[in-house]
Length: 429
Image (cartoon, rainbow, N blue to C red; front, side, top):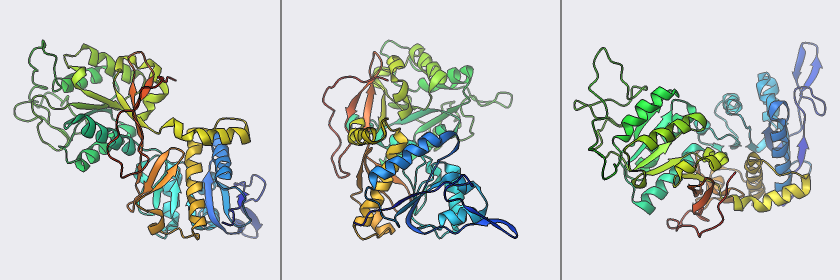
């Protein structure tokens, strides 16, 4: 392999290789030397520290660079005029890495006008993924897919529900659960969204839990909601997707009415104070939580020490042991530990390096190989539709707080369902 060059450029006229040149008709974009690959990262503003770490990670992934390899641009240039943004985008001849912000990814697509250079975006927003535009961050869809797969194959769970905030994250989790259930041949899940207020959470989650498995000594579950009238707003579904049938029972997102014990697995999408309200409602309900598989987003990991009351609940995330070598290498070079976002830049640049070693072919056929790639956050595979499949580990919240690994991440995509992880030292943050 001839190495990939790293040409660091400052944008917006901030010194270095500026993107403007003075002309008689005002400012115009300056032509920059081409490169095989152009990378966009936030090298200025509030995310400058993260962007610098991402650029550093690319250096580690592509050592021994030559003069015509990788050009790194400040992604703020994508907010400039069309001419200036095009001048930066047109540098990449074979592959584009980044940007980080979803709004900048959308800007790239609009500028490309359909003729998209294969792009590995650093965002976790699945909404911007499409053929030739892959989202490299760990997404809600990847997390939910891993959780549903584990719950279905390891515990024979077959009926799923979700209680979610009426937010971008909540709807992403809900959409992901619907797709994962369809992929697994399961019934459509029951999706309930709330507005974040304590009263709304108590009402909606309380009603939903009446359909959960109940304790042996609890009275028979009551109907979820009374039949709505013109004078009463629908207290079940603020989105208008779910409805109450003639018997007053809650219908799921497909319009089907679940049976009396409507679900055996529940995905919660809340964090912070709203999650605490969820926990309080769960504790005061007649639902038998020992018979219910509780699940949540990977965001729970950062404050798992406070989640002892959710002991036994699952979340899916990369196995932290996979990134130890990268972290040690980064710390040795730069003196600090890299952020998780640096992992995404490292894996993307390393993939580019692998393609260069194989002759520099960056077409969809080579990028979407079924076996995928091994990265510092585990295995991943780019799919033709623009989505990315990831092998994540499943972690379990401990009764005293913190977490342990319940099922290890797969090391290849053709593995059988994971066996439980060996007991290890609990981890908390």
